[in-house]
Image (tube, rainbow, N blue to C red):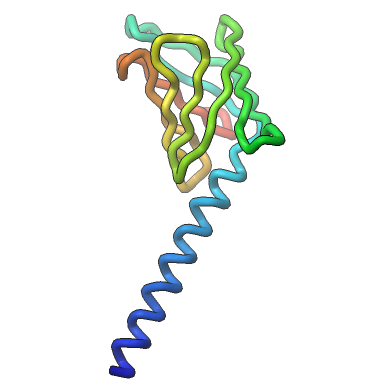
Length: 118
């Protein structure tokens, strides 16, 4: 029984640490990014994006990718969803290295936000 308690305690500790890393990753998304992507027609784009934290816990995103776009979004776990006025939002996954991998335009458009140029 004592061995089971130790294993359960270790498992619970690992789960808490994993959840802490997810929350920290979400809290660290504010900043300047390089943006690379594909439009829904397959053409490529690149530019920059700025993510700013808002007082209500949401984030504002401003993209400069040939055209200026602006949106507002929320983080749930490792998923960052941004409404920018199109029919479908951009849905990013927050990667462990801090990059944001996203899709938009009903899954036909792709967007990569990275803090370092590629």
